[in-house]
Length: 247
Image (tube, rainbow, N blue to C red):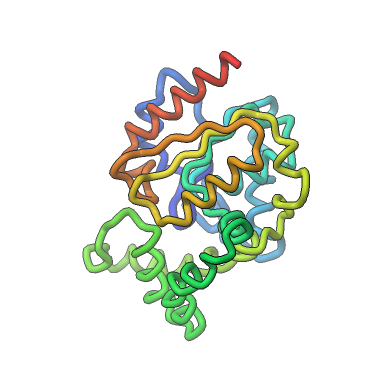
């Protein structure tokens, strides 16, 4: 289980409690998150995180990822397909897919990120964190978030910037011809009904490239469905894994 950016392994807690008894689960803190060391910038962060995930695996395994963690799960499957039995990709923020398929949405997408980008350019990480969580958070108003948590989020903004090339420019080459087509493991693409519109475009783009996909919609959920709608997410995971075992 690979968590989203700005979170930690414990963010899977509610999903894991629902899945306990049905699955044996492993979650870890990605670089710069939770109890892991800070990312030192010496390796591309999506690739590095996929390599760390691979270190936990000794046989084909069902891999579940959320947001940035979902893109890491996909990168892992591309790098080490022999280790991945199935993929559950929850709200994958692989923006390059949507922008490649629907270039007409690029101006609106860029505009939606402009406040964050402007804040980062002037070094105002606290405002950047506010703008980032407004789009990709769990709906908690910024003013309600404790000051120490606000600062912690601000201190992690460098990790969001570090993932930019992987998510927006496909530095991992996953959109190159034949790469995703070669992944034959079952893939569940999950999204919230209230998520940013680009998530639907991403999942549609991945579905068009991956040979064996299933879709699930979490009604009433936005981007942070594993936290806000954990039971529904767990139900969809179990349904998918049961079905994939039959094929």
